[in-house]
Amino acid sequence: MSPSILRLKASVNNYPWGKDGLQSLVAQLAPNAVGPSFQLDPSKPYSELWVGTHPNGPAALFASQTPLLDLFTANPALLGPARAKWPTSTHLPYLFKVLSIARALPLQTHPDADRARRLHAQDPAAFVDANPKPEIAVCVGAPGSVAHVPGLAAPAGRPEDVAFGGFVGFMPVQEIADALRATPELRSAVVDVQAVDAFLAYPAESTLQSVYSALVARGAHVAKDVRAYIARAEGLQEAGRLGAYATLARKVHAQYPGDVGVFATVFFMNYVQLCPGDAVYIAADEVHAYLEGDIIECMATSDNVLNAAFPAPGSAEVREFAEALSYKTAPPTAYALPCAPHAGTQHTTAYRPPLDEFVVLHTALPHAGAEDRFDAGGPVVGIVLSGAVNVSTGNGDQETYEKGGVMLVGPGKEVMVTAVGNGAEGSCKRCPNWWVVSSFLSQSTPGTYRYGTLVLYVSHSAPNAFRSISSSLPARATTRSTYAERTIHTSATARPARVGATVAHHQLPGPASSVTPACTAAAPV
Image (cartoon, rainbow, N blue to C red; front, side, top):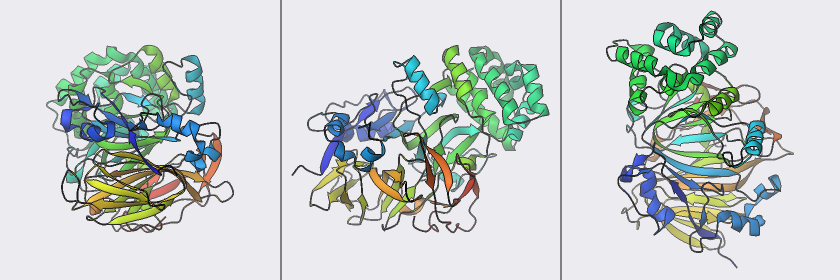
């Protein structure tokens, strides 16, 4: 009988926005995630760690170096329910990443399914797959590692615990209109006076498109206006939103002087501030630009991206970017991703985006010897972010993994994870864990999940540092299966909210629903 647990080798990349050397969580994980071939360069940025089957960063079996995709192609039964859901593919349906961010990522969007297919057909070298790329980001940085910016929407947790900042989605149109009225340099940068006047007279998503497209199309030509605003912002004594805009603009300008993205993010997009355990969901065609912090990402298996700034690409890509955007406007709370305790477990909560491809689980083991277990229909992929854990299956196989260790567990197994105290970092006094689960909605019973693939990681924060988000979804909220292009249905039971929690409005691709931050009060899902 072949072993049910296999060690994997992850891929690491070095984009310039990553944190340098051992400041980067990615570099800290790499010795075990990549193996002996990894050689640390303290002056080099380490931006992302990938675990998946995408050709731009494929995982492999650690011992034999066999690509993970080759393993699944030769043994498609290892994909479990994913094989039945997507019978023509032997890829994992999701891609899991760890990101360590020191400066702004490119201002970007990910194309939807139709655009992804067209772009791949037109330029397969630049767009290596034909898939859309909805994604989630979960904050895993140390509390207080990112400065809180007052004057904007408050984080779900304490301001002093903020550990991630990023621009996500367009602000409500009235806030954009107010920013345009208050910032003559921004109006000058747009140039298209008719578009600006039309938007200010009638702030709406339709008129926003004309203004934003005109701005990003100007690229480097806005540098003079950006620098003029920064010079004025140095002495700006404004409180509230205008003061926050000045703070963010100075920060981004210091990283990308004169870049059009300074205006295209600060004055148009929500600045989302996350504490450890907070998460956001970003659908295809939504604009975003992460600024700083450590996160995990999980997304449908794709690497398709359209950029517009940080730095500005060629004009053809900017036009495609502007055409691809949804131009939906909403407050930052609209992007909050729900999580709630996971049924049948003692220490695990679940983040469920409105997708077929995956669900993220977080297991917080409070001390050495603590354990949790669950059944998974498909393969389990895991990475340890801190300390050491023992991973075992119902047939008796077990392996211990220390920080950075990556593993694959075969489908149809009971998975048990136990915090151990013999890791290189010493005794495990607290061992919170994370997982990503590929979830498939039953065709016959909307809202019934079958579990396929799953990712585990152990994080640094104490169990009580993580907040869940209770959700109240309509009985049959309709959304699209992004990977398989099939209509699915979701359902959930309303859950109680924590006293004093902020109510967020999360717009799914179907009927509207709402989510309310309330980790400790949420009922199992």
